Image (cartoon, rainbow, N blue to C red):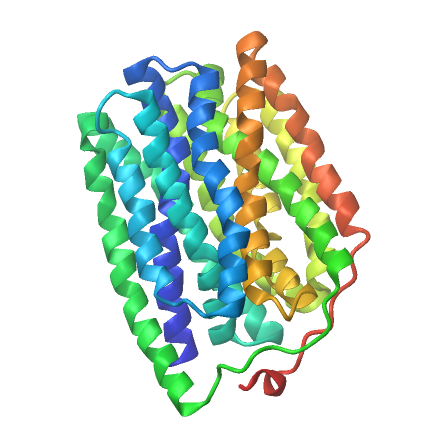
Length: 389
């Protein structure tokens, strides 16, 4: 199997996993409408998906650095889907939190190993940037599809139909299997599986991680409340909110691929730095621009937050070349999911004031990411021959 075919399968499988991260936010309006949850309560649901995931991701990353665990890809995919599929069964708030948390653990287990495998398949340099961009694209498409999938299933029959949402997980698990067979073949042949070399730059990695945390806070905050906010601002019921979420997630699909292309010309650090400035202006526009122009600002926000997305993963791997799994677990997982920890704070503030007021602090987050990226160097990437390619 060619590297392109493997990356394509991994990308589609990534989509099947990240649809469940997007599904959590997409379920929020239905939890409010059907169960009467307030802002703080639905923030707790998002927190449940994020908390265990945040704790577990670096642990899984450390495990995969010591022992490759490719079987985690299909198993974690099924766990991620099962949790979301069961969260609509019954009316218990505690059980809803438990099932969403199970999904978060599945997502946590998937990302470090899948990112390690994707970088191994994709290679280094510009080829590696493009490969990781396409791998990330799959996850972004999964996010984008989540509101449509949830609206099609839950919108038609209510939360009792969430068990149907397990279907993407079953498909994603099946798609992993050819890639795992190809990795086993390469390992047996001794080709394309050598560990990467280089010196760790821990200080830069810490700064990068803090920048991604800031990105996570603004993205998760918007993911959680944008649907409700757009409904309030524009009217039109849940359709207006669903449309806003689709724009937020779909814009990321374009941003990820664009990021890989731009980085080949101007470098990852410079591209990420300017993208965060665009994101800061766009988030402010979401809060102040009237009428349907809101959607344009959401699209710009999405591009500004997603252009650096795959670049940050490869930067993390290049800053910590001896710990690819840990770097992947943190940049692709922990610092992404940890943004959910801020959601209850935003929800409580919204309950006490207004939703728009609660979202204002999000404008500062991309500016902090920009400031951190100004201190980062562009790492030297080993040539393909150094990686056993």
